[in-house]
Amino acid sequence: MIQLQSKLPNAGTTIFTTMSVLAQQHNAINLGQGFPDYSMSEELIALVNEAMKGGHNQYIHMNGYIPLRETLAEKTEYLYGANINPDTQITVTPGGTYALYTALTTILQPHDEVIVFEPAYDSYIPGIEINGAKAITIPLTFPEYKIDWSEVRKRLTEKTRAIMINSPHNPSGAVLSVDDIEQLRSIVKDTQIVIISDEVYEHLIFDGFKHESILKYPDLLERSFVCFSFGKVYHCTGWKLGYCIAPEYLMKEFRKIHQFNAFTCDTPKQIALATFLKKREAYVELGAFLQQKRDYFQQGMKETKLEALPTHGSYFQIYSYKNLSDESEKEFAIHLTKNYGVATIPVAAFYQREINNRVLRFCFSKKEETLDVAIERLMKL
Ligand code: PMP
Ligand code: GLN
Image (cartoon, rainbow, N blue to C red; front, side, top):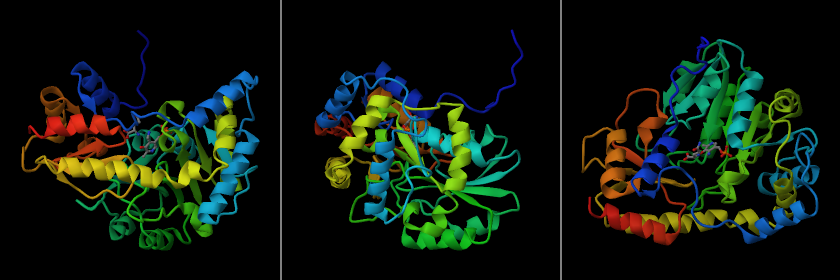
């Protein structure tokens, strides 16, 4: 056996895979891992077919299909008033996770520190540690899942290289406000801190909330990598396609890493998206579509003993089981999967520290009939 020193000694299999496998084994309704079970746009599928049949099956430009980048720049201007150069500031990536990882790899040197808010999407901390840097974790307030900015100020050091933010937030569905942006702005002003903004749920926002994209704030964009996922918003998570927007000087370095890693992404899908995204209905109606699912799920769940925490965006809704059990979140999630046939995600899995708020994350981006069966089963709790 070759001696191998693990780059990620503390990492196991992700909770998403663990719960999806358990769901399959127990024939449970899978409200764990975040993916829709309804079909994606037929028009988009037809556009991909057309591109493949038209012979577009070879490598495409390493930074992304140029008309797609142009369409994204137009969309970004329409939604956020941002003036983005598609040639120098946008790179298409194989998914949002890859964009985040590449951004971290672009900026981090050993011993740098990155501020991460917990609960944190599970790829952030490994992405930091694999680069020899250190995650400084700050818990979001419970149960509102808000950032305690005074705590952020206390945890800044000479080594702070970046702050990672995520809105709409996975797993809580919390969204950042204008006030949060102001706080962030005053903290990073006159520092060397880079912002990595995970905006993969950009359009999945409810209740009249506005997405406070970093792209709306030119002074913040000047020091940011903003990461997106086509898979998450267009109901095709298996496509693993996303993109990153950054100022030219940061994107130049990002692309050096990208060119020796993925180099380029799926050609037919990029060609299809370039046409599909020209129509604004492709994205402006997504929030209302998902909000309807959230409302449907919340309404049905009122018949159960689980208590809803607010959610204003993403695919997810957190429920508290504090009336039902003192078990750890992981134990309770396993219990629900095995004995009640509904798989969820323990929110504790998004923390490095030991925590038990007795809450589970449910993914409601499902067909109504799927949600109905899950609710019926949970009513027996
Ligand atoms: N960030 C967050 C918060 C997510 O929930 C996801 C979901 N997978 C991603 C990034 C990554 O998206 P992708 O599948 O495009 O890599
Ligand atoms: N983002 C998805 C979630 O939070 C999972 C993606 C994955 O399995 N890595 O459920």
